[in-house]
Length: 124
Image (cartoon, rainbow, N blue to C red; front, top):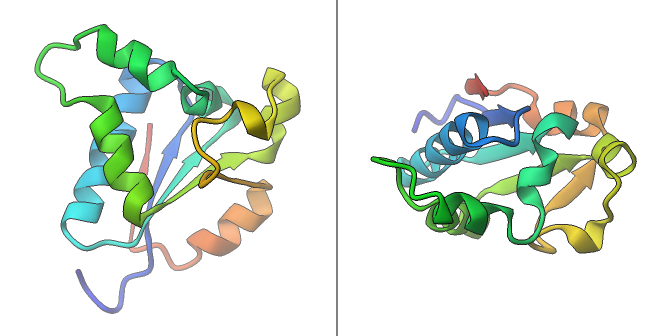
């Protein structure tokens, strides 16, 4: 997209399909149109990044929605996915429980530095 824009940032704060699916759809769409995409999962949305969680959503066969695992694969291949460090203690999981070792664990201030100058921001 525009060379003057910073990254496209998508913030997910809900681990249910109504929060995760639009986050994944917008993230994958951003990758598709050439944006530098950062997905940030707040503690409320962080459990969606655990092993097997997107597969559970896929098994729900959400009518009219794309496969969440395919969207994930698009995003992680070219974008950046961050889980808030607070989620680990708050939700009781470890980095090894996450679906990929490509997921970064960062504090909120570190995420804000990555997101500085964002050209587009979505929150779900």
